[in-house]
Every structure is written in C-alpha cells, then in structure tokens.
Length: 222
Ligand code: CDP
Image (cartoon, rainbow, N blue to C red; front, side, top):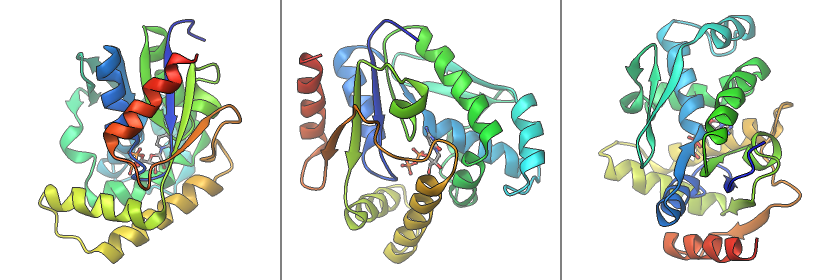
C-alpha cells in the first residue's frame, strides 16, 4: 500500500465522482485516475471481439490476455487497449449497457484492481470508482462517498448527454442508471457501498465547486 497521499472517491452513477475527482487532483497538483474508464474499455474490448458480456469463461480468458495500458499526462491519461486509444468509445450505448455486467466478474475485477494499485504506487493521486475505499486503496489518506438522489443523477447525466449531442430521453437515462445501480450494489464481488471510514457527502444541493471545497477541507484534518 502506498505511503503517499491517496484520495479515494466512490459513488453511484453520475454522482459527480469524475468531475469532482479531476478538480480535486488539479487543485492539489496530483494525478487522477478514473477507474470507470478501465471497466468501460474492458467492456468495449469484449464487444469488439464478439464476446457475450455474460460469458464468464470467455471474459476470464480475455482478462488474462488483454493488453491494457495507461499513458500518463498531467491531467488524466490515455487508456490504450491493444495499443489503441479507447477514449471515443467509452460512452457508446452498447458499452454503457455491458459495462456493469463485465464489472461484476471477479477475474475481470482482479485484473483491473492490479493495474489500479500499480498506478497508485507511482505517486500521490485521486482515484475514483465504486470500490476504491473498500478494496483498491483500503488505506487511503481520505475516503469520500458521494451521494445524490436518483432523479438528480439522471438529470445530470441527461444534461451531459445532450451537451454531447446525444439524442436520449430522460426516462431511458433513468432506467439505464437504475439498472446499473442495481447490478453494482448487488454483485457478490466488491459491491458498491461506502467504506466504514468514508465520509459521505450528499451532493443533491451542492455545486461541483462546493463538493471540491468540502473535500479539500476534509483533507486539512487528515
Ligand atoms: O460515470 P459513471 O458513474 O456512469 O460510471 P463509471 O464510473 O464510468 O463506471 C462504469 C461502470 O464500471 C460502473 O457502473 C461499474 O459497473 C463499473 N465500475 C466498477 O465496478 N468499479 C469501479 N471501481 C469503477 C467502475
């Protein structure tokens, strides 16, 4: 486990982890790792190979052989699979539908967690995901669990998708989010839940800046 500064931020779909985590990392001048992108890239690789996201043994084989690498920049990084930048594929609809299924498979998680821990050993960072405080960085300097009501999260994600020019309706976003929440919280391996020593922050009525401020305040007391 790293002895330098590590901040673990977990929370459900569209709770603000990524935007908040990236801003905290920038304010502190440390690296940022969004672990959701790794599960998304894995799901994309699965679909590209024509593997059924419910086929556990094919996923296990892929988890052992897939060439997934992170190439760092100061603000985030490029995630390469088989040498190809995955960024433009990670929010595709079929990836969105498959990601929680592949993320529930233990051998997939083991491969992703190993890579995440390796990155964490390289220096101070903010890491965001579902199991960072409970599994990946159990000794993190600070653990935060972001919460928000389902409707607020669906509205945020809907707005985000509209900004990216995607034609989606609110009910579809809400249903997709509810399904991913269900799979993420009910899976046997590393279910989504706050670590016992995590500080829970309800973001329903807070701006991104306010959440960032709160995390920086909490950090002062560590
Ligand atoms: O951005 P959003 O909240 O929609 O999702 P994400 O953080 O990109 O994560 C996508 C999916 O990957 C989640 O719904 C989980 O199924 C899975 N995931 C996980 O299992 N563990 C993590 N540490 C991060 C993501």
